[in-house]
Length: 86
Image (tube, rainbow, N blue to C red):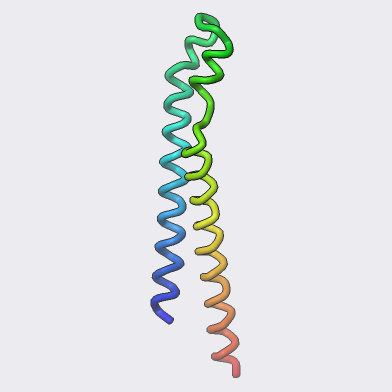
């Protein structure tokens, strides 16, 4: 059962890293063009600062990995309690 703990920790870590990296890349790009809001066309500004589908998928998959990792941790701890009480 040690592998389940390791797997859940890896899922949480990888999910946090993926979601954070994608969100930071979006906010970095957004902040670079934020000062140009009044100087360029609004449709071009919205197209440049829009979150790409890859970033959206990375954030969603990262959050899903974190939730799966946390649920595995909770399930393992509940299972360990039940087996020790029996």
